[in-house]
Length: 277
Image 1 (tube, rainbow, N blue to C red):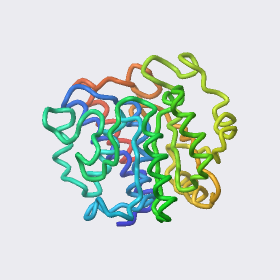
Image 2 (image 1 turned 45 degrees about the vertical axis):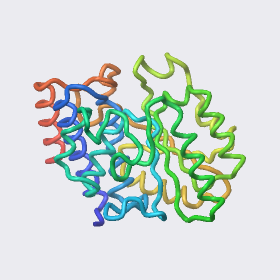
Image 3 (image 1 turned 135 degrees about the vertical axis):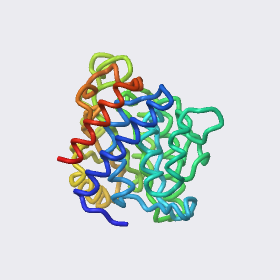
Image 4 (image 1 turned 120 degrees about the vertical axis):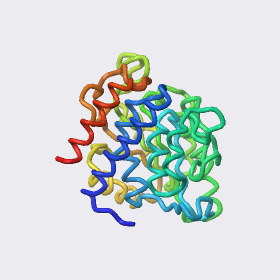
């Protein structure tokens, strides 16, 4: 099913509602990043930026989506359920014993989950490996690796970028959620990253920047990425953690905290009003 950009923006708020419901139900999890990246995940899957099929989730020709920053998984789970990879009612099993929806995704535990994540900075290495295989076997599928900006502080990440550049992996797109926050505070206070774009370009990456809450712009930047043929690409996705819920937006405390029942009611009310506007 194809959605208009306006419909996708509405879907993104529905995804935010699902995230709030999942996290309040279990009483734990990461709220800020998942809400902030909801527009991106909605555009990626529901906007058709990757070729995946819920009726054939392991099709050899599918694009690969690697979630490196695993704590964002409520957003990915919610969008996969919306697409029909599994039933929505399963979302309420997040982080529970024997659930397929763990706090960090487990490879192939759930249709559409391509990698196991947890230790930050390792997803990019997995994505580079997949992209090398795709290139050497002359496959048409592409690899999208979603990372947090805090992950860029890991040395392994830059080793992976060097290899991606050496192998000229034009089939690899790295998306960095540049929300300027990590669990211990603002990135520039914990371990400064700037000038991040200059550093990425020095490692041979083709860099794009986009407003991570403008789905139309996200669609456009992916079209530009597909026109890069000689090297890997990075999209700096500028987002606000907690986006859509005023009392959460931009606050570090919501990085790794679930809302209380009362806070969830307030958040869902605000998201509902936003959607009605």
